[in-house]
Length: 196
View 1 (cartoon, rainbow, N blue to C red):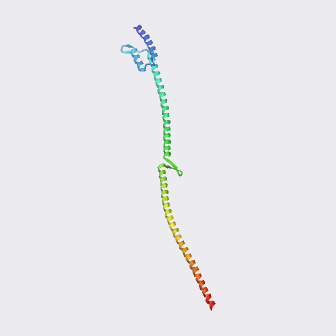
View 2 (view 1 turned 90 degrees about the vertical axis):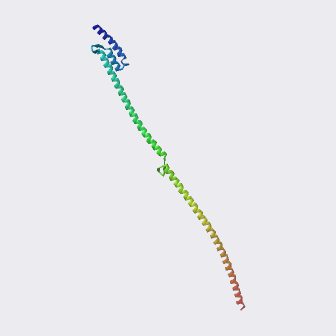
């Protein structure tokens, strides 16, 4: 029985060494199952070699250490990505702010040194054009009215001047006629005095 036990121990050592080489490929759970299945039965107990359990503990610790390294690496990666996401969100917020500013500038213009919405600017410009158009029409009508009044006044002035010229000619003729009549009367008077 001891020889059997010894031979089983030696065989299990070889198996353990073979398992150690395959440890990286096997999971911890598979290694536990293999250890339990390969261990000897003694009444209701399982006899496990100390070397095998130590190897399993070593493998488990290595696996836990690798998992911890992976967790640390993943946490660092997550932190890096969180930082990158934060910086990208900040850049996106700045880009959105810049886009809003560009849209506001596109929808507005500088009018008399004041940033004005294009709709308000168009309303102001068309109001100015409307007022100028109204003033042009009003001034045109007033000009036509004034021009007609001026022409009528010129015509009346010409008529008055013509009448005045006529009156002047008539008065000159009358004065001349009166002057001749006066001269005639003087001549008659001189004649009458000369006859006396």
